[in-house]
Image 1 (cartoon, helix red, strand yellow):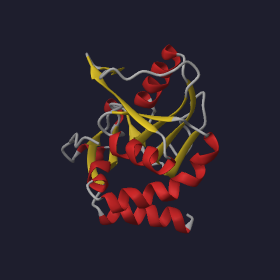
Image 2 (tube, helix red, strand yellow):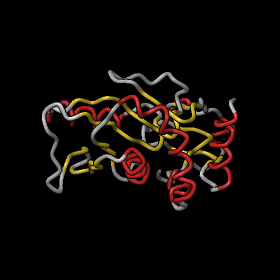
Image 3 (spheres, one colour):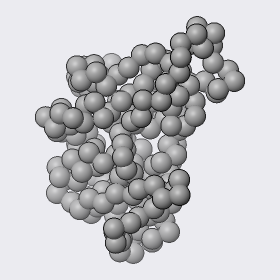
Image 4 (cartoon, helix red, strand yellow):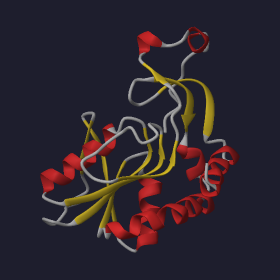
Length: 189
């Protein structure tokens, strides 16, 4: 693990954002580890530092706008947009589907970066890509603080994560006995 990845992991540990136990992830999968990015996002100095470490990987994408799914991607997306000096908008749930509200719009061909806090299977990031495609905007990439799939999750655009980890995940009917003994919780991102 590189020194910058160690620094990122330490920021998560220090802010109590890296949890252990038995968790049901947004994807429905179960895991013994959970990244609760809201814990790190309480501390803007930590968020600023995380995005400072991520920004060099994003500059070449030359985006005009950052789109983030609410809630988890809000702080991360806004800080990416601030550091890149571009516009920030967000998508939010309506009838259990991400949509643009608040009169947010994209120009045809507008270069947009999708920002997330944690990606496990990429469902919300893909919903954002679908919004951009429907609007005629040009998705240039997806940026995330953490890629829980360690590079296994793929998109039609570049996927750039600050930290790649692969904590095991399990279907609800395949949880190992030692994990099943711990009551499951859904702490939220």
